[in-house]
Image 1 (tube, rainbow, N blue to C red):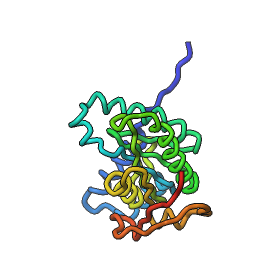
Image 2 (image 1 turned 60 degrees about the vertical axis):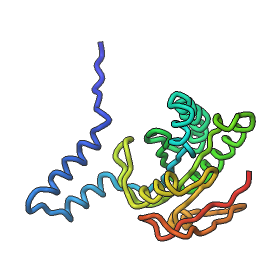
Image 3 (image 1 turned 90 degrees about the vertical axis):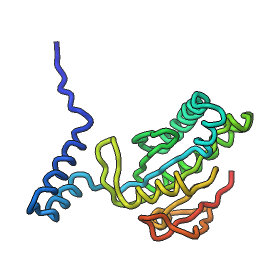
Image 4 (image 1 turned 180 degrees about the vertical axis):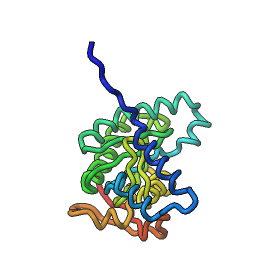
Length: 209
């Protein structure tokens, strides 16, 4: 019988925790340790945060089981869209998804395709059955810890845009994300009155179904 060596998926997190512990020691060379952390985990990604509009209110009105159904349906409808645009779904917490992409253009194309897929899905659904998606996008250097999580200013900004700022059907992007786009044919960008922490500016994407 053959044997396969299995290494836990938390190996990256274990290494990060070890380096952070070293950083906390008296007299630690924090500059050198920070450089090691960036060398190990530093990558550049486009990051997407999604949120389902009205989740908390809907749970109170229709019950948690109904909204578990909505969450599962959103994952069923949107997962193929994410996969076809080469997105990596790192995690799903409640009604929110964290997805990363190598290129901002693919992330934006995916965001548009997700909204259009839900537009079609909602056509024959009653109000409480509809899936209403809010989206935030960022792009820049961040720390990617295996397939568990990402950390960075653009991550924080995209999270704020997608989970707290965006209304249903809206796609909000950071200034760095917008700047990194190669083409914006058929799209417009309206600057928001306030930018989230971690971004200098933020924009609402104008698009048509």
